[in-house]
Length: 81
Image 1 (cartoon, one colour):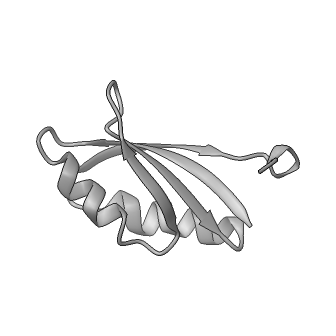
Image 2 (tube, helix red, strand yellow; image 1 turned 45 degrees about the horizontal axis):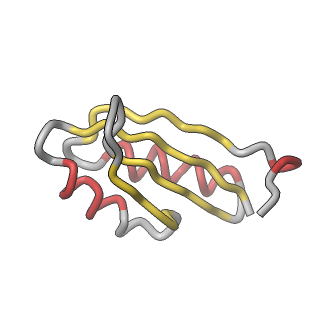
């Protein structure tokens, strides 16, 4: 299982609708609103790194009112659950 965390910045006043759309994505396991530079913190998991990459690039980034994303990939050897 591959895991990445995504920091999402959305258009002002559209955070809740963006989060709602993000939570509809199958690979998204968790999403939380945050204060600061980023608006939403997202946990993405997939069977392969390609699955995770596709969820981010082909789904999350294409959501209306998403301004930018920053992806933090988990180092598999250090993924202690």
